[in-house]
Length: 206
Image 1: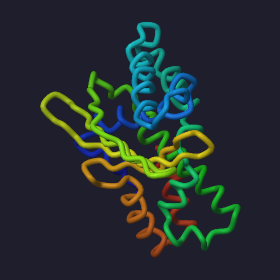
Image 2: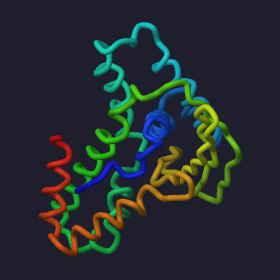
Image 3: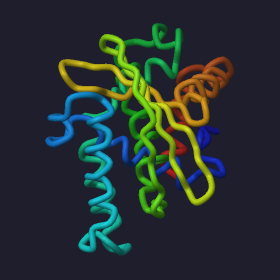
Image 4: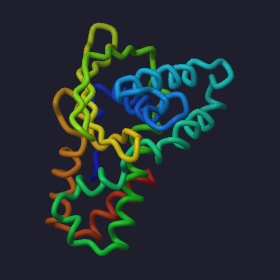
């Protein structure tokens, strides 16, 4: 079974983190910022405005809030690179059609299992610690503070035509993509690509 990797007991904190990430790169005001951390800080303000908006409060506005996030997700994450990395060498064994199919499924998995749960936000705070930029690659070191708990979060980004795109993140030094790769690899060895597709589709239906 494809688990909700990385959520576990930190469910609400990780969800709001990933919700914030969706607005980080490419939105109007964020794109005008100079560096990746600048873009992150501007974007978090935008996300907070959405989550704290009186007009968007209540269960009746849940789908609208979610859609506002999802509308920008596709342009903010490098989902194709994330999907490719999550399969490792097995990616090269797929046909072009199978690769496209998997990218679509992987994107939906991230959207539904993480970003789709934005209502778990409960005034968590984010601390910006430092950034490292080397050429077109960057890592932003942050932490989410939830009451007495501080959880370190590292964002890994790559610049593509002037836009910084997320291709992985680490929560308490554990890579999201590495977790998926281990789980997907186990399924692929036992059930091949068709089995992996079936399991993801079943999870998306639940």
